[in-house]
Image (cartoon, rainbow, N blue to C red; front, side, top):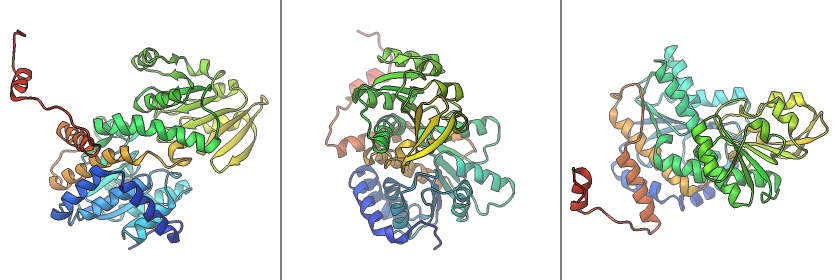
Amino acid sequence: MEYRVKDISLADEGKRRIDWAEAHMPVLVALRQKYSKTRPLAGIKVAGCLHVTKETGVLVRTLKAAGAEISWCGCNPLSTQDDVAASLAKHEGIGIFASRGVSTKEYYDDIHNAMKLNPHVAIDDGADMTVEMHKAMEQGAMKGQLYGGTEETTTGVVRLRAMQKGGKLLFPVIAVNDAETKHDFDNVYGTGQSALDGIIRATNVLISGKNVVVAGYGHVGKGIARRASGLGANIIVTEVDPIAALKAKLDGYSVATMNQAAGIGDVFITTTGCKDVIMEDDIAKMKDGAILANAGHFNVEISIPALEKQSSGTKEVNQHTMQYDLKSGSRVYLIGEGRLVNLAAAEGHPSEVMDMSFANQFLAVLKLAASKGTMKPLVYDIDRAQDQEIALAKLQAMGVEIDKLTPEQKAYLEGFSEGT
């Protein structure tokens, strides 16, 4: 079994952290207990390209228990937890190629090493592995049959739908991100909490009383705005979508252009999935001490070239924070190289929300494995019934009961009635 991790001696520490996450992921554990008996993934090869966190470790254990042969790599240069990677290599016996702080070349080398398994199913986050697999398929370098893939995050789904629209998608992909039990919880509550956690860990600034500028008001932006507001911040939302902007306004937040917000913001958090959200003119207007953080998948939302152009020098404040001395005399602080702040400077999403996200991932893998390659090369949504099943399982794990429709109520809702 080949692997590339930073320090294999961290394996026992990583195992303890995976065990901790597992204790808070009852839905995924219940699925493991169910499918470890029938082992529906026996003979199925699974390659994963996901943030290597303790929660991911629980997913890997579940896939393995269901019979899968697994290879894995990280999906962001700063999101791998090295102790978890070591544990997956030593204690779970998988081929893992991931370490924190890799170069761009090392990052893609890790993806290509994970692909050498010639998987039946690919699990992706951000679509980098999916794109590399397409390149390999076009070059005739992929061996075996790829039944399909799954995609964990909004950025990846956007890329995949563009590939489908352009007629370039070569295999089916299930958009796990678009499940309600994923984006309405992972993106909102998970990123909302973990992004603020990353900023606080990196700076220890008081959020209360600060002007926090949230760029983008999708699921991630909503979650961050809500958490920052709960900590006492004044929220300013920037948007390009008039409907999203209107929602932010009616939710009680100020709405402005980035150009307007640049001079009054204390903390800037980008969440759009697009590039060049904060540019040179914006940076030039920022007040002394402004903090820049990104919660989108790629490090393109805060323009690093623009920041460097505006700066006369830099200084590392701590492991996660870089000070940029602007030519205007002000200082701004960039967290985690502009990469995902919740993973670059903290531990990522809480286990409780990843429980549902990874339950969706696991069930999507089962569906693709069962298809044996018969699904068309399209982007597929999660079935509504699966969403309902996972939500109900989560409620039951929390000790919450809900009402059920009576046969008469079902008939009323499904039929035509005069309303009397």
